[in-house]
Image (tube, rainbow, N blue to C red):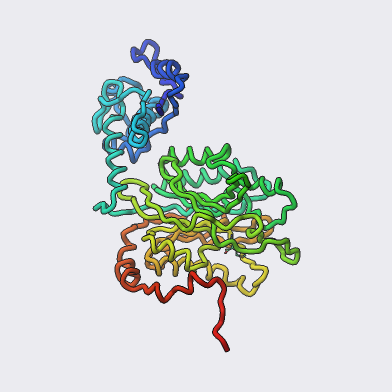
Length: 467
Ligand code: CDT
């Protein structure tokens, strides 16, 4: 059974204060060794969650020391940052236990209860009403997850473009840059942040590696792993979901397999869906004539998970149907259509696209145009949002396009990065804007004629008609 505690930071009280603040830690030390108990630290409840049961003015007053002396007396604790942190974590522990119990059937809260607080006032050593907040939050979770919700389905998206990542840049430093973007996203009330393809490292397929050991340095063996756990923790603390591209190394069926992978993680830090890149561009053998290599066909297997669409909820009224694709996938109409046939409402795409294409340098001047062309048409033709996010700028001598965009189901760009560095573009995306395309021009059930499209799945390369 999972049990949640909130006692890491002790509540420091004036000498002689009668509240027995150490009891929570003492309780934890008593039960922590029980083999059947999995004790975890609770995340602090974010403002938006507290505001489900409290007046926003009160939540702000607590956060910013805006309490009157009388209000502090009613609570029974003098205001301090540690007091606020503990109050948030106490609610967080009740909420974590409630949500976990809904999944596991049972869970425990070691942080006590603070249910004497009312909507705009604390009372009896209670700052926030943990039970009221947790009840409202699980109701909101359920409302968001239920289809046909009457609330507008607006997901605030952060397209978190990354500038160059040097070959020698440690993962921890890249994760720190990503955390900075998460903090910026939280300040913009983002629900979901999309990071680029192979976000944690430089775009390593540009080099030919002689040994597997060299190659494996760019791969993750666990997700989250030792260096990425922080990213999950920060996102969960901020109450933000994210989509992350990375190089995945797994041992399956007694052999090592490597994929170019993306995951979508919900606001609680749970991996909801995984996608393994299907359209691998470039070449499998070393081609020294190129200014730089593009060895995706050597280093990765073709993804074996198809293009799965999945339901996800990023908050009350924020439930929708999502899909993922990676870089070169975005150039193929099949990617969008397979997701479109599952009713996808938002496709999350990370990419690394060099301006220069060694086999076709005549395309270089069109690299931005092509980037927008494919995502805008994919969005419109399938009545879906598309979020395309670049790793941009001069990386190890290779100029990569930025041009990260958020595209509406109309095909219009509603958010864009304007630099080639670390940058966040934000857009409020109404998932219901997909309906007017899905029920009219692109009402697939009415207008598609799949019997006439058989060639699409039966033939791989083009075979011109007989002369
Ligand atoms: N990463 C990736 O898929 N990049 C490709 C480069 C194409 S050139 C071989 C892209 O389609 O942007």
